[in-house]
Length: 181
Image 1 (cartoon, rainbow, N blue to C red):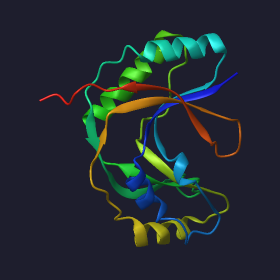
Image 2: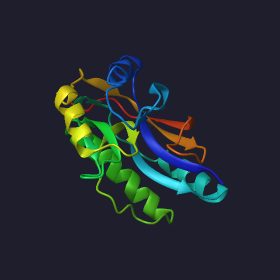
Image 3: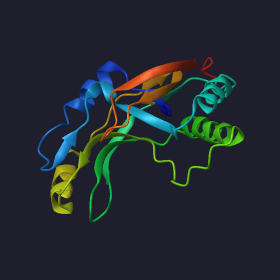
């Protein structure tokens, strides 16, 4: 039974810039740079029939390519921080693409995603890290920003069941169309 999700890969140069943010945060388990991605839709542990349906229906997506960039760092978890991440700057084409993934996954019978879409790349998962430590880390590095990079495809990833996921394997890739004018 594969564990699947859709996402956007991070270009090598951008991944290297994200990787330079490692360190200086007690209790952080840093994500390996080859596992950086922006999740569009988590499908979960699904049977082979549902996996084939998902892979097939994703090919129906016809959206234009677009640019993204990262604009700051933040954390999930509030007073009990769970992770730190690089946040993606607002990008309507990304939201449109994610909405289409959600719509299609519901069409094939997956339960609706209940969490609000917050486009990001997880940098570290936290255990026992204080909110003060996270605040210090974010105040020192929180103004992180990258140059725009093109998004010309999205992928269907698989992962093994493990703490923190990874390694992630690209099962299928789907091209985005030319940039609309």
